[in-house]
Image (cartoon, rainbow, N blue to C red; front, side, top):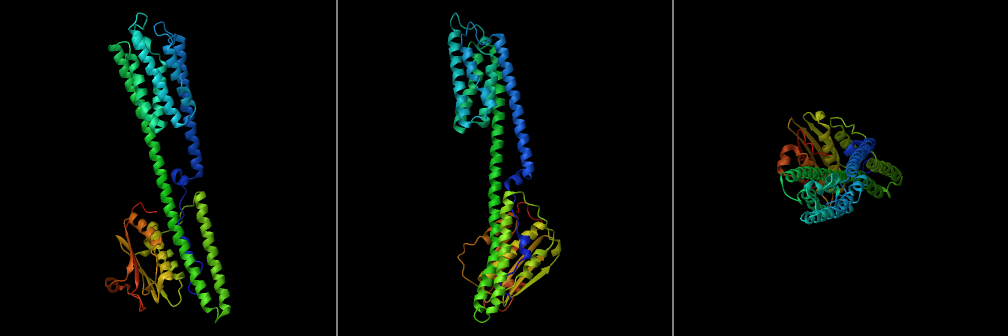
Length: 438
């Protein structure tokens, strides 16, 4: 025997839309995500190995040419070259961002100090005679690599200090002896190379930040979608269980034998809701299967057909090419109908008739759920209609809920002769929907 609740609701199972996990959204699935991560790691390793080989080859050239120790520069070039050798661990090891940034600051300070000392020595009799004697081939290459890596991965505060210091150390070294045509050309070339390294590092940094922000936005949207689906589905079943329990308690004294049937229906409804919740949670841990929904209003018809409230007649009125509704519009209409019927079970008093009308035209879809009951008390803190309004607004439509009006009565939504003034939920969607719907 049924006491006004809902039994297992096949239409409700179709309405449930499980959010896809972040990895699936970002990369197409766990397997694709693993392969993509492996390919990126292999690419980073290959690039790092090439840069390390290039730095090592340049350093060997300087050692072979004997430029690290020069008669006019003493050990200053050797010291600055040793400091610039920090580029090796910076490339080969993924240093923490603060260590990388402040280490680059230390390297640039040492390089600038050596440049200052070389400028002082250039004024003496034993100082360097030519600008080419004040720098090696390895140091500007290493400073350029550090400039790129710091701009790309350094901590914000350390990077803000390190970048101007690194660029200054890179450009000023050829100008410490004298400013002539040759040293100016070298400084200009180093400026262009350093600017390119800086621009490329900052570009990668901004791209990574944008991807991270996009991933956070996806997570937020998934949480909202999960909360909406959880509320819509669970509230629909739980309200049926509550009504069944209330009905069983009301007839327990007069018809004790009917209680067993009610408890059996409560058990099956609760088991179905529990199974659906497990599927929803499981969908958060692995890639969800594609939605097999097809165009049409079968889900809405199932919801109306399975909605059984004692003493209440539930009708569905269709107008226009209802079976041609696209899947995205069907999903939103079903969720609104489910939420409206759930609220009627919970809040509508003295209700005798519920009419669900679906009007489909070439440019718009209108769904209206009206009852003739008297609205019950509510704390106004529900999330169902609030979340559906957000989804509807993103799709370019409108969703309203409130007491029935004279205009609605004139248009045919006056649904009965109950004791209340009636309550109407009205959904209007454009065709086609915006792509923002979820």
